[in-house]
Image (cartoon, rainbow over all chains, first blue to last red; front, top):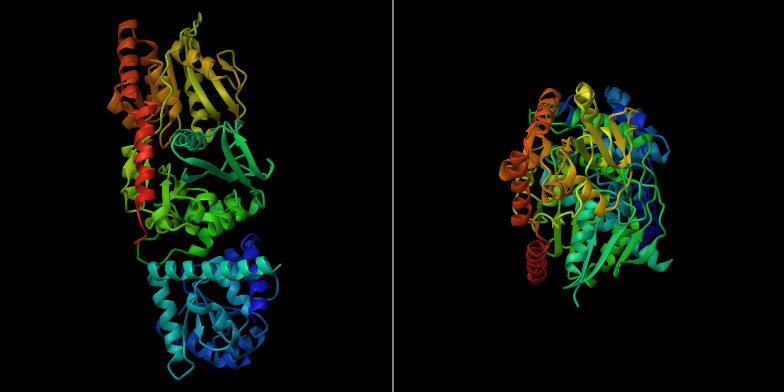
Length: 192
Length: 397
């Protein structure tokens, strides 16, 4: 995984110098809570439980922007739960993905892909979610991750609220994320 | 000899810019004591940040300048961000209810990066090679070369020269956050230091300034028609449009406006305007020494070496009082006048034009004394070396 993570980190580093989709950025950029998310099928229920908790207890105007292939399943389940209006699937395209990450308070990784987690770390978006899978492993100490258990959904919702209020914590995670992508990217350059 | 790097957004003989001149002067002053290397971009144009100069090392006056390529030019994407930033992040528009801005830090980073010059190679270099330098100076808070570069160097090895002024961009919270850890700072004036304390919430560091050339011109310009002088980049952002409008109002009073530098604004063709383009230092000092007054209409200055050079040539100076730094120069020196708004500007121009020889000599002398007391090269060099030695002697906490 290290070699592929390194090459993905190099690609994520290049994302910094690509333009975001400005129309989407303007649409998503709001003072309300904005989550970006990357999840696999198994992570869908947890992600939506966490987002439900946010809507119910923190911010009734919150939005969820779902990246990667899990997006359609999340939107379908969100509609079934009656919160579909708050959820959007960010289809492929680096500009759209970058706009979602720049507009978001955090990326929530419930499973999800390594590349998306590295993209978030590269552009300075804090990462939280579940401590499981390759995506969690690649983030290391640059992400705030929770064990997959009954309290995980509530903890993720609380983490994002804490991140919104705590500039020092955001700053620490941004620095760690930058260092993580840089070190992985450097190993890619040296092995090239 | 110990190696010291100076990071600045542009470095070339062809470049006109205050912070670039500052960085080069510091490089020159430090080069007698340290093995100095300037790290910069390949850009010469501060608007497009186009990749123009060859990347790599070139020696300029005995000092190596290592340039890193800019990866893109500033384009519509950044201008769109800028327009929104001006509306949403300025202090009058910022929310005061404690909720976060719609501008997350990642988007603020994006704004800084796409402003340019974006040089990832410089960031990589600093990350991988900072151990080869005993200290790294970063000039100008605003640009990616400083903002991203400084994050790659341990804070105890950095010396930041922000050249901060009260402009909308300075209110982006990421600047205050990024530079808080980099506590070795050089301010050019006490007013700049106070501005930082107000906007960023901290202002510790040393007020040092910049050395000002003070040899008096042997042959002051002599003209039949008295003239006001402006030297530098001619553009609306520097207040030159207001200066031209003020002069228009008094076009029948027999005063000319002489300008040197680069015309980015498109000066109108008027019989009372004379644009000389680039002039060498000797010619500039002659023009200063013979001017009725030197005018600096810019609202955004962190030092203004050209105004201090005019003071050294005994020219009364007229400055925009909305710039705290410039107002402080005038109040401390008694070297001229500051104004508030175009009506007051017209008034101060007419006042300067009406000075008798004795009063003019008194004001001019006060300006020269101020420069000699504060900005002699030997004084600035000694204090700068002291600052760098202090950084080199420090250890990581």
